[in-house]
Each structure stands twice: as C-alpha cells, then as structure tokens.
Length: 326
Image (cartoon, helix red, strand yellow):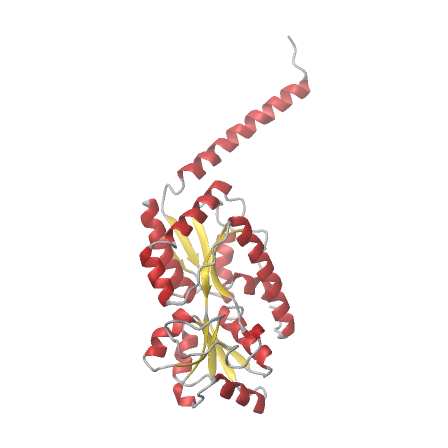
C-alpha cells in the first residue's frame, strides 16, 4: 500500500515534535535536578538580595537542592538582568529583582525586552520604603524636608542605589507628589545609605530592610513611610499620606521573580508553588513581618498582568518626573 507524501510528512513532523517535546517534559518534571543560580542584579545587602536569601533558602530545603545567590550589579541592574534573559530556559537560572518595572520604563535601548524575554513568576511581597535623613540635619518631620525643598528649589539632593532602582523611583514619586525639586546622586548598593549617615547627601527613600537597624541605632532618622499603613517596627513614624502628602506619594515596591522566556510552563508553575509554600513557612513569615513586607499572593497569570501594569505606571512616572530615558 502506498502512502501519500502529505501524510508521510505529517507523520514525520508529529514524530519529530514528540521527540523534542519528551526531553522538555522530563526536564520540567525532574526540576531541579541540579543546583540553581539566583541572579540578583544588585549588590549584597540590598532589599532584593535579603529577600532572595530568606525565601530561596527555604525553597532549597523544600526541594532538597541548592539555590545559589549570585550578585551581579552594574548598569542600573541591567547587567545581571541581561544575563538571565540570555540564559538557557531550563530553570537553571532565575532573576530576583525589585526594580524590574522601573528599568523597563527608564531604559529605551535595553539588550533585552523586559516584557517578552521573561516569564513573571511571582512576587515575595510589597515592602515599604522609608524616607530617611541624618539626625544631624535637624529635620523632625517630612513637612520640614518638603518645606526646605520648596524654599530652595533644586538645592537638595537624594541618594539612590542606581538609576531606575526603587530608591530612585521612590524618591521621584515623593518629590513629584510633594512638588519640589531635588537632584539624584547615584551610588552602588548600600553606599546610598552610608552617604546619608555621613551627611554628604540630604535624604533618601530606601527599602525598609536596608535601613531598619540603622534607624533603631539612631544613625538615621525616619521622617515617613511610603506605604499604605504604618509599620509595626516603627509605629511612631507616619506614612507619607498621614504626613500630609497626596496618595500618589506612595511608590509600590516589591521583589519579583522571573524566568527566561520559553522556560517550560511546568517549571514556572512549580517554582511559583514552591515560593508560595516557602512564604508560609514560620521562619520566613517572621522575618518578613519584621521587615514590614506585606504578602501579595497572586497566580502566575495575575502576576503577569500586575507586572505589565506596573511597567505602564513606571513609564507614566518617568514622563511626569521628566526623568531622561537612558
């Protein structure tokens, strides 16, 4: 019996597809079969780094595998992010980053597509930002800082962990909402905090985890919290809204988890579920509660939509603050 060429081609294509699909399915089912690299595109001790270590240590215990944190700072976080975008989509490399949407809005010529080259998996939670100054500055309230900023347009400066970081966009959201001018001074990682302590920079809007111990030690003074409510660890510090600023003074900061595009869906789903499980572990909940991190549970699809909406919101902030795109 003769088989027509069309039928033969279809059968061959189906066979080839099954041959290619089988290893991918097996890879997803067995993941992780080896140690996994976690890329944090910021320095050690930053909010993204701290959160990554707390959560992924627990995930490693759950899965019986090593999750190795690798800090790759540089170029406003884009160096490490690009490394993940170009990594094999086999679940062996994960990006954990708290300024993904900000970078997407700020850089017009990235070596990767922030929306198409990644799978948004989940977020660890939303972390408040603290408006901090050196106690030697003499400002007692956020109103004092804003008043001086308005009285001396452009005279104040603020420190950040780099262009596009949460400390950058958090400060821009604050000053645009309050209506005063200030100049950014970008540093690498925690230098943004030490420069405030030294008195060489006027103020900073920092992730809570970066500055809590320094506030408690009296090395920094907190004038306000960029969040929807006060933080239990600093109950006497008002939110920016309570201090008299509009609701848009709050910058939503979260640490997100991303995989390279084309990573098998089963791996993304398994990573999502294991992180959700880790966030319920008593040790993780206790640590995050101390840092003021609020849970933001979402499905994979929900976080994907949230991330895209956040990119759009950051694009709008860049325009409103007249931040030059890079």
